[in-house]
Image 1 (cartoon, one colour):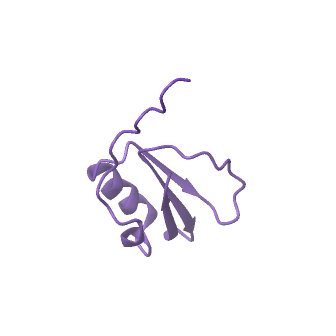
Image 2: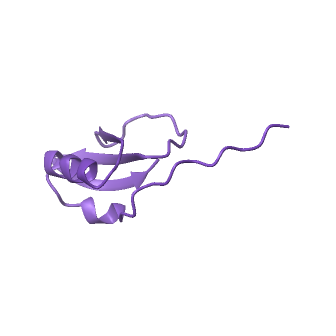
Length: 71
């Protein structure tokens, strides 16, 4: 059986620090902190649940981040 690959290191960042920020400013800040992929989603979006190292997800309502999570 093949070994399980080690995922790349993620930025040492707290997702909850983005909650309440303007979506555009939050995305810029996330990229500056080293996130390779930033995804903004409207509330209630149907998404796949695969985990992707280096991705930060924002749930955005009325232009502001209301929820944020890794993967």
